[in-house]
Image 1 (cartoon, rainbow, N blue to C red):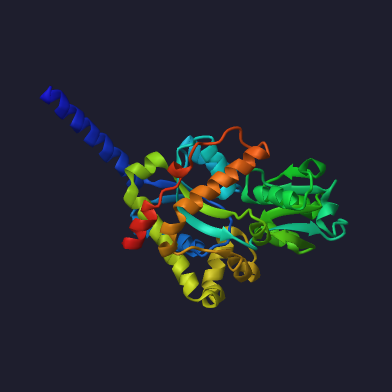
Image 2 (cartoon, rainbow, N blue to C red; image 1 turned 90 degrees about the vertical axis):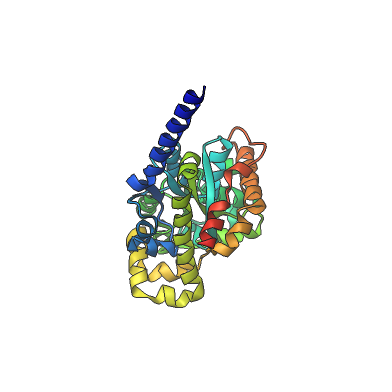
Length: 329
C-alpha cells in the first residue's frame, strides 16, 4: 500500500510539474482591438518579460470567437466583453474572470448613417442595424431597444464582425451599427452617435470587458496569471496618473494604433471612453459586483433567447485571488 501511495504521489508530482511547465513552454493569449492602456505593454513585450514565458498573441474580432478558442483549449487567456462572458458561464465553460479590463463608456456606441432617415430611436424600426452577436454591443443594443420600448423583431439586426461592419458601412449596405473601434471610427466619419454604452449603463445595463483564463491553466500556473494581471494593472496605473500625458505620448499612440488598427488621432478620445480599474479596485470589483453583473446579463440573454439555461450561481466564474496576488507583488 505504501509503495502504491508513493507511486501515486510521484505520478501526481510529475504531472503537476509537466503542467506547470506549460506556461514556460508558451501561452496563447487572445486579444481584441479595444483601445486600452495595456496595449502599450503588449507592444513593448512587458508581459513576456514579467512572466518569463513566450506568448503568442492572437487577434480576434469578437468575444464569441475568443470564447470558442478558449473553450477548445487553443487559447489559455482571453479578452472578452461581459456579454460573451455571461454566455460562456451560462453554458458551463471552464473559465474564470481574473481581471476587469474596462468599464465601458463612450468607446462603444450605436452610430446611425447620415441620410439613413434615422433621427430618433423609433426610426430604427425596419432599418438594418449591424452588430457582432453575443458581444457587449449586442447586449447594449438589445438593452437600448428595451429602454426605448422598441420590439427587436421590428428591427433588421444583422450579425456582422467589426471588419464586416466597416465594409458594409462603406458600401452603404447598413443603416446603423453598434460597435467599437476601429469600425466605430469609420462609422462616425459619416454618421452620428444615437447612444453610447455610457448611456445604456445609466439605463441599468452596464457593460465591461474582462480578462478570462481557463480554470485548468490557472490552477496549474497561478503565478503566470498573477504576473499577467500585474502588468495590466501597472499599465492602467500609468494612464490613470496622467491621462493627457499618456495619450499625448506619440510612442504610446503609435503602439496602440498599430495593434488595434485605430486612427492615431482618435486614440486619446477612445482611451477616455472607458474606465480602467486599478489593481486596488479589482478586489472589490471581482466579488459580488461582477458576479451579480454576470448573473444579470445572463438573465437578460435568456430573456432574449440568446442562452438556454442559467447557472444557480456565477460565483465560480469570478476569481479575485490573482488580482490580489498582483497587487501584493
